[in-house]
Every structure is written in C-alpha cells, then in structure tokens.
Amino acid sequence: MRAILAARVSRWTAATTLALAVAFGVAGTAVAVPPPPPNPSDSEIKAGQAEANAKAGEVGQLTNQLAEAESRLSDLQAQVELKMEEANKALVDQQTAQDAADQAQADADAARRESDAAAAQIETARQQLDGFIAGSYQQGSTIGSISAYLGSSSPQDLLARAQLLSSVSGSQLNALELMEQAQTDKSNKDAAARAALERARQKQAEAEQARQAADAAQAAAVRAQQNQAAQAASLEASRNSVEEQLYAAQQRVAGLQGQRQRYQDWLAQKQREEEEQARQAALAASKGSGGSGGGGSSRPVSGSASSAVERAIARAMSQLGVPYAWGGGNASGPTRGIRDGGVADAYGDYRKIGFDCSGLMIYAYAGVVSLPHYSGYQYDAGRKVPLSQMRRGDLLFWGRSGIHHVALYLGNGMMIEAPQSGLAVRVAPVRYGDILPYATRLVG
Image (cartoon, one colour):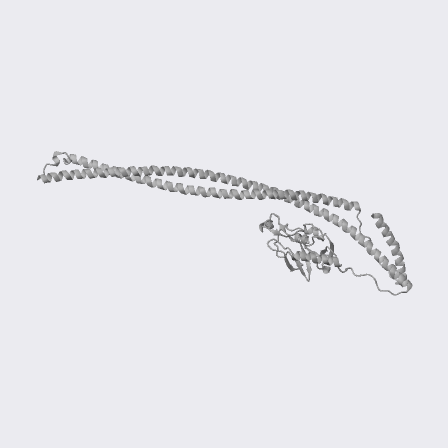
C-alpha cells in the first residue's frame, strides 16, 4: 500500500512540476503545495483494531456477568420483599397475641378481685353470725336456752320469741350458704381466667419467637441483596472502565483510519488539481475556449442516499411518543431498559419498553448503517460536517467534555430525539448549548 501511495505521490510531484511551469508561463503566478498529512501503516491500523476488538470482547464478557448479577439481584430483591411481608405478618400476629394476653390479664384480674370480694363478704357474714350466736348464749336468748323464753307474758309471746330467734339464725345461715356458693363460682371463674391468661401468654411467646425469626430472615435477605448489589456495582464499574478503554482504543483506530482517509483524500485532491492544471495549460496553449471546471466542497445528495435518509427519518418519526428507557432500543424497535444505579432506576427505566438517544438512532438507520449503542461511537460512525453545512438526516451530538446525547436532524432547525428519563421520543428545536461543532453524516 505504501509503495502504491509513494508511486502516486511521485507521479503527482512530476506532473505538478510540469503544470506549475506551464502555469508560470501562462498566468505568471504560482500555487502553494500543502505538505501531505500523516499516513499510518497497515500494521499500525491492524494493531489498533486488534486492541479494540480485545476490549470489545472484554466488555461483552463483563456485560454478560453484569446481566447475571442483576438478574440475581432482582431475585434477591423479590426475596427481600417477601421477607418484609413475612416480618409484617409476624408483627401483626405478635400485636394480636399481645392484645389477647392483655385482655386475658384484665379478665383474670377482674375474676380474682370478684373472688377476693366474695371471700371477704363470707368472712364478714361468718363473723356476724358467730357474734350473734355468742351473744345469744351470753344473754340466754338463743334457741334451746330456757332464759330466752323466760319473761314471756303469754303463750303467744313465747311462740313469737321462738319464731324470731329461729328466723334470725336461719336467714343468716342461708345468706352465708348463698355467699359461699357465689364465692365458689367466682373462684371457678378466677381459675378459668388464669388458664386463659396462661394460654394467651404462651401464644404471645410463640408470636414473639416467630417475629424474631422473621426479622432475622429479613435481615439475612437484606444483607444478601446488599452484597449482590455491591458485586453488581463492582462489575458495572469494571465494565465502565473497560468501555472507556475500548472507546480510547476505537478512537485511536478511528484516528489512524482518519489519517489514512485524509491522506488518500489529499492524494485524490492533488490528482484533480494536477489534471485541472494540465487541462488549463493545454487550453491556453491551443488558445481554445472552455468553461471553468471544478465544483464546490459540497455535492448534492444522490437519489439512493436521499431515499435512505428519508427512510431513516420515517422510521424515527414512527416512534414518536414511545417512552425513554435508558439502554433501550435496537434495530428491531424499542426494548426493555436496563439499570444504571441512579437516575434511570429512579424513573423505573428498567421496567419500561422504549429507546434511549443512541438506541433510537440505531433503529432509524437500521438496514442502512449498523450503529453501536453508544453516542460517542456513533459520532465517529460517519463523515464529519460543520454545523453550518448540516442537512436533513445528519446526527447531532452534545457534550464538549464528553458526548452524552445524540439526535437526528430533520431540517428547518428541528430534530427528533429520545431526550431523557421520564420523557418520550419527540420532535424539538435544535438546542445549540453544549452542541458539538460537527454533525455526523452517515449517508450521502
């Protein structure tokens, strides 16, 4: 390749020398010849491409590992949510058991108070009865005592005294018996209440154990989820680092290829200049007439290129209103977004089906150009043109300190883009803040 290029340079040098001599004879002016740009060797380009391919393979491996880690993280998150619900259930059961134990304690306390009150009443009545009996014997007025009947004025009075004494002692004995029965009932209630309290306390203890076990299971699930999240974050950091290395390697390759292309463009341009100068010299020598040759730096878009551009724009416009999803979109259409560990996750992009900015460009130009899913690489996927020369179908980029966004130019100061999380594919005026000074032309 170098030999061919050197031969072409030699031919150009000889021809240019002749043309310049003719030009001096005809017009009396000289044309300054710019020096040739650098021309990297094939081995340099191949070495750079091999390095970029190796980094791309490493990125692929890390991406697969990260996908597996995130899948595991999703499973662990589901387990955490389940354990949280189980912990909530255990807490509710514990509160229910606590309420039941509190009620059983209150019932037992009330039953004990009733039993104690009944026992106190029985003791008071017993003391009163004992006092009555003792007083009756002391005064000789109890049943069966002769003194109780002495002093009766008549047989009727004697009978009345006997009935009175019998009634008083009998009613007290009956009241005492009824109180003892009531005390027995209250004691039974007290025993039943204490048994219920014991059962409630047992259930309370079981509920407490279940809650502690559920809390421990929840804590273990959270720790596992956090460990997995740390692993995923480490993998993502590694992948990002290798992606940066890949980007740098591809930039070096693109730079070498750009140098090669500029060198070839330089040769072609000088050959055209040589041919034009020779033609002008021949025309001047023959004193013939002819129109001026050459053309501007821009050329009209061919029919096939124009058709490809319009098809790309039509495909992009067909996705208006589709949600933004970070990492979403491919040549077939919108896809589920991926996690970014930050803003996109906060908007739930990993649950949405949609496009991010570079994913929309991939879909728009599918079948025309195969684009990588990264705006920085898309910037180098075509020919650079100044913004002053941008036309319908060109890609526009933002981020002078690092490319972070891409959109498709529609003409008349408008563009179509997948803007950011929380929004959707839309048509908007071109924003010139932080825009790169060159657009990328993929066809034409």
